[in-house]
Image 1 (cartoon, one colour):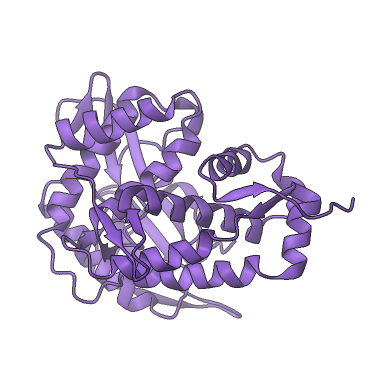
Image 2: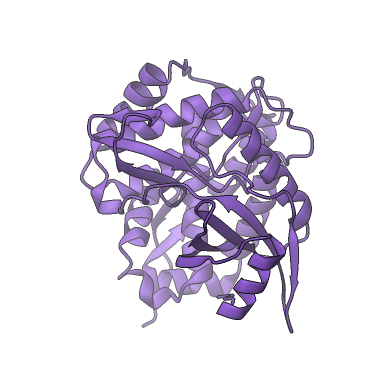
Length: 347
């Protein structure tokens, strides 16, 4: 994990013209590390971003999007300074941006209530309405990005050593047709009508809640959704892809709720009723004449992608003790993306 020391942080704050700051905490994600601090003017966040091939262009898009969503009245993090700093280290390069601070905390997975889920759907609907007004030039395509990801998954799962390890250590295997169907589904989705800019990472770690106060826009009873962060995966696609990405997480995270309850709270009570957005079933047909429900097949795509990330990033031996892996595996089995392995097991 990349970390800045106190002297380095002070020098960066000097560049941004901030003095007498008090650092109050640090959080780290896959793409960035966030340093939170108070100054005489206002609370701020310093985001230190991972270097990728398009980091600067992406950060410019994200900064502009933050401004636009803030102007639309949504509780988002937006740039407190337009500059993007390049930080040259001995072996790595990082980029830093200064952002406004948002109140609230992420909800623990075991603490999801009906109100949290309804608020999530409501906020997503209004976010989609605001994003619909934004010019999407320069943003990537959801379909194109996941075509690349499915290609990686295909190479991974076709490796004989991976297949044997899955069988011997986890007793599972990929259902043979899963990835081929997803490839054809994505190709069919290229021409979908109604595509727009989407968040594409509207999940627990990027949504903040707090006890409600009168000025909060999204409030049900004593709970408010107070912040939407991390637009770094924003991309162009049909809104059902954004909804599916969130649902795939909720179906794993919300162990105390049935699937029917989660869908009712998120889709009906949140997205449609409070968000006043219509949600209709959409299907696509591939060149073989096979038809796919876009929402359900996109959920399959994201569930299988989450399984792949678990397998890629963790020792197989540890996964059966990982609550979220087991929940995701069981969902993948239920949705017939995986099956119990038929390969011989060697222990």
